[in-house]
Image (cartoon, rainbow over all chains, first blue to last red; front, side, top):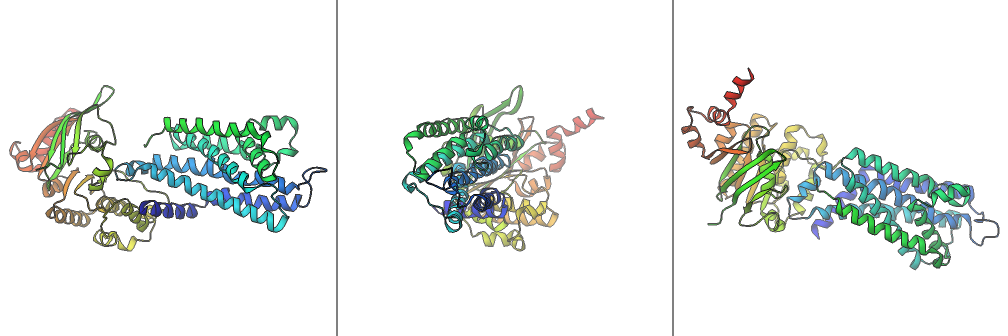
Length: 247
Length: 244
C-alpha cells in the first residue's frame, strides 16, 4: 500500500508538471464546453426537442477528456517508460512493473474524471444543464467507454516498436476521433455521409451511449454501442497483453 | 554455507553470435567479484541473464539459492541492481526518485543520509535531468543501495566519475563489505578492480578466459600489474598488432 501511495502521488505530480495531459484532457474540454455554451446555450437540441442542445452535448464534450487521456496520455506514457527502460528497472525490484502500469492507468483516469466534473459544473452553473438521465446508468456507460478507449491506447503502446511509431499511431487514432466522432463537431449537425463515416469510429459509438444515458433516453437502442464497447475492450486488452514487452 | 550467487553453465546466443558461452561463477557471501572484459564481451548480457531480465538459452543462476525469474519478490528484496544506463521518469526530482525507490522495499535505508554520503544533498530538489553525468552515476549507485541489499550488482559503477568521487564510492562500498555486503561488479578500470575485487572473471567474446583471485591473475601472466595482465588475457595486444 505504501508503494502504491508513493507511486500514485509521484506520478500524479509528474503528470501535473508535464501539463500535456491537463491541457489536452481537461483544458480543451472545459474551453470547448464554454464556447459551446455561449453559442448554443438555451437552444433546444432540435425543433420540438424536450432537451436542450447543451443537455445533448454533455456526453460528447467529456469524451474529449477520455480520448486525450486514453489515446495520447496513457499510451505515450507507457511507451516512454518502456523505451527509457524504466519498466526494466522495476523488473529488478520486488514490485511488479505492472504496478507502475496500473498507477499510470489511474492517473489518466483521474484526469478524465477531473474533466468530467469540470464540464459538468460549467454546464450546470452557466448553461442550465439538466441531466435528464440517471447517474446509475450514466456512470457505468462512462466507465465502459473509458475502458474501451483506454484499451485501444494500451494496445497501441504494446504494438509500437519504438516511441516514434507510438506517437504516430496515437495521433492517427486520436485526431480523427477528436474531430469526427462528435466529440467536438456535433454529430447531429454533420452531413449524413459524414455521419456514416463517423459511425465507424469507436468513440462515436461511445458518445452515443453516453448521450443516451445522460439524456435518459431508452437504453434498449444502445445494444450495438454497448456490445461494440465491450468487444473492443476485450480484443484490445488481449492484443495489448499478447504483444506486451517490458523493454 | 549458502552461496550468494551460483551460476551454472549459462549460455546465450543471438543467432550465430555467442553472447555467453558456458559461464560458471560462484560468489561467496561478503565477497567482491569483478566481471571484466571489453565492450561487447558479454558482461551486461551475463548480468541480465543472471537477474532473469533476459532469458538464457541454457543453464541456471541462483541468487541466495533462489531463481530470480521465479522468486522475483524474494530475491529482489535482498538484491540491488544498478544498470549501465539508467533513465528516469521525465521531470522527476532527485528526492522523488529516492522516495519512490525506497517505497518499493520493506526495510529501506534512510535515503536522506545516503544522499549526503553520495554528495548529492544539494541536488535533492533538482530535476534528475539537470544532474551532471557524474551526479547521475552516483545517483544510480545510491538507488541500488537504498534497500540495504545483501547483494548488489553494479554495472560500470564509476564510469564518468572524477578521481575524488571514485575514491569516495570505493570507500563506501568497502565499508558496506565490512558489514557483509556481497558485490558483483563490472568495470573497465583496473585500478578500481585491483582495489575492490577479491576475485575476477575475464570474458572474451562470451567465453571465460580467466577466473580466480586477482593475485593469481597477475601471477599467471608475464606481467606484474593487473592492467597489463588483463590486456594479455583478453588479447588486446594481439588485436592491436592485427589492426596495425
